[in-house]
Image 1 (cartoon, one colour):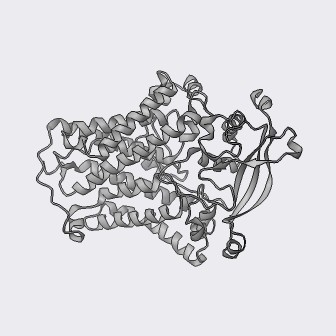
Image 2 (cartoon, helix red, strand yellow):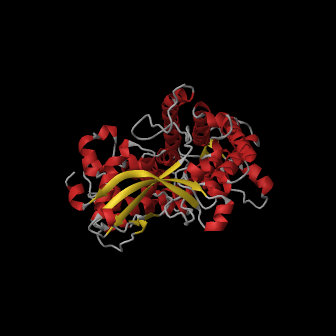
Image 3 (cartoon, helix red, strand yellow):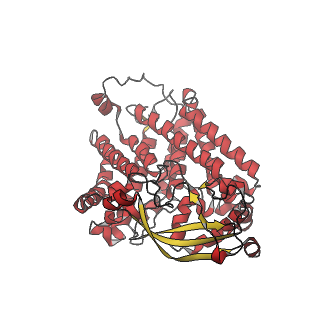
Length: 479
């Protein structure tokens, strides 16, 4: 069945299956660590309230049957173990139906989490991981060659991801068109990493070159993913290099890491073998069973039909960014940073043990990833995802949708809720209940080289105002 198989993509399948599974491990571990205080029974946006008002057909999830924190842990741990088995290559050693069922189970379990995750799971890389996991289910096992249609569908996914991101930038903020976006982006991105300040302080002409190179990579290179070899492999290499550049300059959860893995769908074994002659040659695989061919072709037709909506979105003047056109997150629209913020505001949350808030000594809560103490160097946390820290960035932008959960977050701080405090880097009260909490807004910018030498500070900040005046437990419980 030469027409059905891609015999020269064994390395691509190896990377796709194990790499996507590794991203699922991270996603499920993040759910184990963060879901309960954010979305659990006593979470900031409790799942039981969500499923009571949103029907199953709009957000399919196991948790419409029932939700409990214990069931969430069962789902997340089950997904983690399934994903680890793929990373180790165990399902791939059996017939093709084994990895198929494992990946579909992972996809279904994570879909159940995402569809009740509300704003804390409203990120494009959630849909990307779901779509990638679904496609990976049909890559087969080591006993058969990878189906060529699935390899092409992975390339179509990378094309939508890159080309969609390029179009949303070009159509969006003028700073992408005049090549000045990176005058601001490294400083104002949601969660800078240890190298972001270094990137920000690069000469401005180099920033313009970076933006121009980004346009070429996202608006031109993706077309070559469908070109003959070695052009397709070269296009994949360009995408991997540019995504690695983004990994070095910021924290975007698993978005860049997963994109690099998906780009391997365009990498040909012979091209890699020309660079690495020691790459082992796989033996001739057996012909795939008829049932597997039928299933893969049916899935291919399904994806092609569902591609109508994201393809139409690409050519639309009102292009949607990170949109799902169906509740199971298959064949989505992608994109990022259609607009770039020019200034960075941060919400600093403080508490005090004193009875009088007017003369109190206030101490700041420190978050694990987002900027706080001006002397603290940002962490490298990606590909892990700190969901609370990301939502604090949106809160500082003034989004009204964030206020409900933030009010409950302040309440949990007043209660010294242990699960909530574990989401933070530092509790200034060591588990003791504060008497009052408040939230102030500061404008942050990176310290110049001279300021860094003189003060030791990574950031320079100035107060902008108060977001939440001092609140006590009785007041917030009464809301």
